[in-house]
Length: 112
Image 1 (cartoon, rainbow, N blue to C red):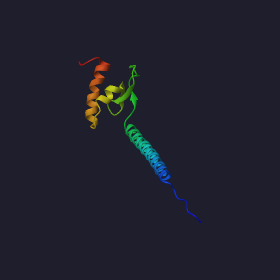
Image 2 (cartoon, rainbow, N blue to C red):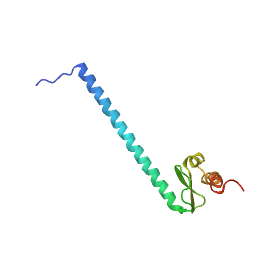
Image 3 (cartoon, rainbow, N blue to C red):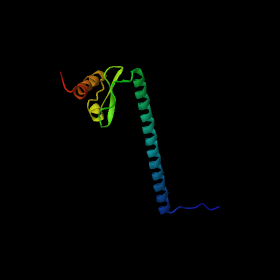
Image 4 (cartoon, one colour):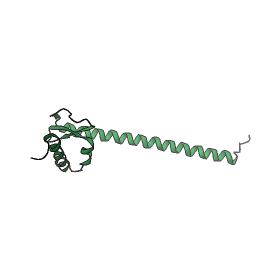
């Protein structure tokens, strides 16, 4: 029985197809890891919210995209998303202090 001999062009084509398959597998793996990471972050976020109360004081008075901000562990207000993200900090107390200054300006109308 004679074995088939591949031409150089065929070998290059097979190598090219293998590289394409490897890239596709790599993309799929990255997507899977990204979605797993998002799910993990989402679960952590939800468990943090369960620790706090969720008593909304006012309905949304702002005509923008909003985030809900905890003034205390149980009191929640809506503030604009861009401002909420602007004062993001790894320290929860610092974040709360900076965002509470925004809340005073929005809901109370400035400093007293």
